[in-house]
Image (cartoon, rainbow, N blue to C red; front, side, top):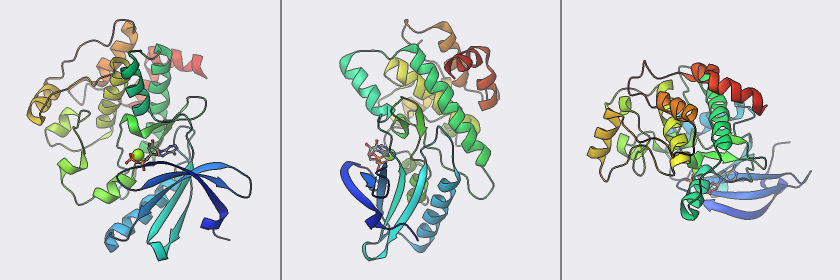
Length: 278
Ligand code: ADP
Ligand code: MG
């Protein structure tokens, strides 16, 4: 029997984003707490709807301990709404954590940064492994898309669907807000690749330490210039030289010099910490 709306009880609204509303729900048959994202497809074209369906089907195939698990989807034709049911991440997201730290002037523990580094890299490895010619996931790597479970383990989420709803829009619109994490190759209008994700990861981890992105400016032109040069200050002094060194590698301007996912995981500082984490 297919899943229906009646199989769940809505507990609360978590928040409303650009594409829909996220609600905390309880699965009646076993009491499991999940979330669903309600998205209105009424204003979408046939082609967009088709893309949404294929995107959701793709997400269903991604099963990894560090990727938000997608369970099911329900389509309510009368309301032109799709409900995407997924794992509930009770630890919130990294964007919220970073703003709390900034507000309270506290830095996160270095061990937590290494844990994020390793677990996000593992999640990305799985996404890249899944990459195939016709259906490439849009990986919108930013702190708001890094969720945490109750044990503060990473759950990479919220990717793919953004691309569906923005597919025909311009480059500038794809990057809503200031694109602090845009890589030098993207600034230079070159294509997105696996290494662009590494750059974004470096920016994100840097921000987790410094509580501000590595490259900032008040306008796009200045930001682009800074990104192309690739100079940034050291992360706060309480963090180790090892951590600074790994971030500096991720933030190498030249794509060929920048490590890929495999190289990051085999980096001695990283593999040592990985063995202590598991
Ligand atoms: P946005 O456009 O802001 O990303 P979303 O619909 O993705 O909007 O998310 C709305 C809110 O729900 C955000 O606060 C987000 O952190 C939260 N959220 C999204 N997915 C989950 C999840 N799987 N578990 C817990 N909270 C989530
Ligand atoms: Mg989101």
